[in-house]
Image (cartoon, rainbow, N blue to C red; front, side, top):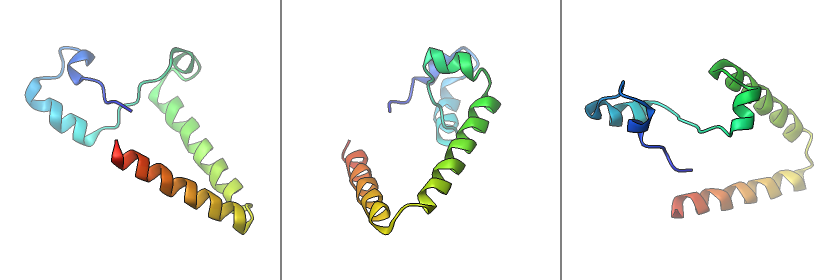
Length: 84
């Protein structure tokens, strides 16, 4: 995912603060339909926490073979990200 240019966020960011802001913040661009369903940062974070919890619970119920496959997929994804 490409990080947007912070200057596009408005005049509130001065150039000398851009780098520090980017180092301390995760910016995620949401699709318009998601913005309509989750209008605030709190809504987005609450939903994200629920998804992470549900995924963790589902993963605990996986068979050892499913867990091994998921580990291999995650390792391959990390390799692809580091090469980009």
